[in-house]
Length: 479
Ligand SMILES: Cc1cc2nc3c(=O)[nH]c(=O)nc-3n(C[C@H](O)[C@H](O)[C@H](O)COP(=O)(O)OP(=O)(O)OC[C@H]3O[C@@H](n4cnc5c(N)ncnc54)[C@H](O)[C@@H]3O)c2cc1C
Picture 1: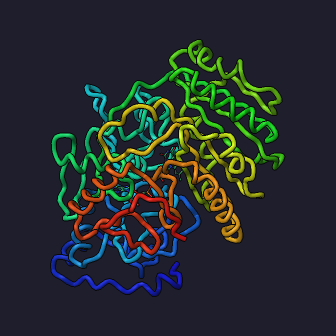
Picture 2 (picture 1 turned 180 degrees about the horizontal axis):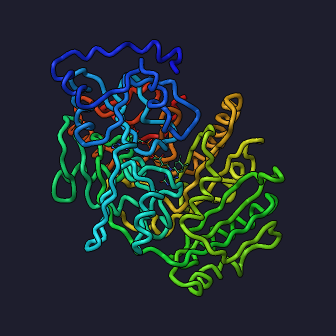
Picture 3 (picture 1 turned 30 degrees about the vertical axis):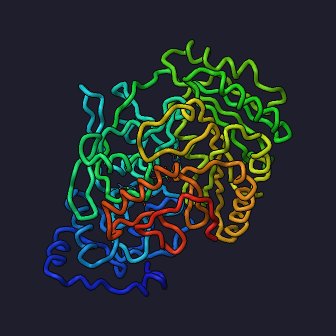
């Protein structure tokens, strides 16, 4: 269906001989097509749809389609944007007047038994990848949401399963294939085109090329995953938060620890939840790992579920429940100072969620990963405490109320933060430090070197102005 805005998008004027032959090989869904709206936003997870209108959409199925998209854009002096899994909260793939290259139909998973390396296309999701790997006794610590695409996730760093102990998912990227802003297909790793390889691990949407494949180290999969979950009334906020933080430092390295402020869907009462998942190979080992939490948890639980069998499939399904499809979202986040009084800094965020929404606030333990020196790569911002707001609601009428709540919380949390994670950020609203200053400077220089014309849409700031300049890496509200 054409909207008023799409009707205003000018018809394409691609009439050069080169453009004509490209278009014969690689079809473009133009704004005038009845299929345009589906192609524009049909695979965008957030139903708070952007008022941005690409000139056309290529649903690539081959590397040549991706090259053709870039060549077409260069001939016409416009940009390309990229979509892998469509899970960017701020719909970064949807850009005005660009050619949107949607990689959803460009699929590949090839696992090498000898090296344990898997080659995967960027639209591959964590669920798809582990669906292939787990039966082979391997796994990859992809996103907690099963349907996040590897493309956006890995470029940002990737806060995957047990990131607290296993490190950033992008540390497992040993090489990438890309199509450059000139339209050339090349391979990048530590020995060749190493600056692009450096940038691909932490540039986020500022990556100045299009990744067509990731080469990933896999890890052994775990045959015994168990979880303990404790749900408390919000009146127990302080003892629960203090306890989870303390014990997450004392537990073993098999455990991922999270505290969540949420609204109980049945009673509509605010609750504070601690959820601990252990990755082990025997039931006894899993029980032993969780014991430290089970034995020490504060009294007055509403619900306690200890040592429950779980699996990636079960955890994925719970994540889908928390992030339902077809909803409107705002995500925000901060890395809190290591010595922050986390319980007090997050009190309002965890205990005053917008009424009637399905929002939740999360504290995610990142120590000891946060205390290790990182490999040399663009990703360079982290702290012991990851905090994120996932504000979820159904109706446009609640947009302003929910956005205002997020803004109010972030204004209060910001003074206690050292920076933020690209993956849960919207640069149109708020920018902050996403890298160390040295790495940010190097990243922006690599952007300009590999894409001097700004062909590949980069960071989407307010009004889409940042282009080859990139982000300033300073804290600044944009609207
Ligand atoms: C429900 C939900 C749960 C999430 N859970 C997690 C989580 O557990 N851990 C975590 O770290 N993050 C998580 N995220 C954040 C998520 O990782 C980011 O939103 C990420 O950008 C999604 O990647 P995508 O490929 O699906 O998104 P897309 O919207 O397809 O891509 C986002 C942007 O990344 C760039 N990009 C993507 N692919 C390419 C490519 N092939 N080449 C060049 N640039 C590319 C482009 O700028 C693109 O516009 C979650 C998001 C959602 C919606």
